[in-house]
Length: 341
Image (tube, rainbow, N blue to C red; front, side, top):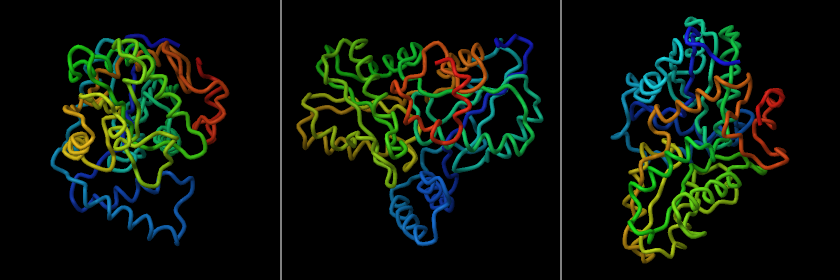
């Protein structure tokens, strides 16, 4: 079902959100750490989660956060989709305001003909995407929202995304192909076989070809988030130590590092470690998909596709069996019956 220029289109950005004041940091981190559990944390576990959150809060700075009243990504995406219909972009937070329930009521008031749900990571399936789908489904039902909806996931080798990643990498990499590239995602896969690591390795292979780098010069790593499964990926620190190039560029694959206000908060620590490891230059690229306009091709692909989890023209990328897809394991398997993959 392709949208026409007269259609009213709602695009919902499901972002993790971040605290807007010092007093909200601890509740935000507690919600983040509890999110990996399918059920609310038991009473004995809550003090442990609280202790982890307090430790993380010592490193959380609000200096670089955008005011909650501003939504630059949503505005950029709305402007990029001008001419595709009567488009309105809404932003909901998983762990911080505005709540998905409030946004679902706003969407219902807008009365859209189509809805596209963009989960926290259109690049990869993972824990946050599963949480986002579940949370939005509950919020939409509570708001009485009945509209044809498509949700995105698992697009690591989509041509539009690859182009953006190549541009990001070339902006910071050492000239002459002498450096290495490290792709980093927050460590938020579900335990028990999430395809995140599988997908990241395939993305690394694609970028090696496009950047004309030898195999092994594009590596992958996770930003360690306590309480979440590692999906078999090394941490950023481990990946830096094993780098054998004199120059290393780090490309975050998510706009949100989750446990700190911004990716730059890690830069001094990583440079110190790189210096000890014999790396002469360490640079940090702009995070992928940090600008709303970069998401516009995926929204158009979803609008050109069918209802449900939509893979668009770039095809959803998961292991052949799909057996460990978090969406399937999280009781939304019905959507897979309508996918284009």
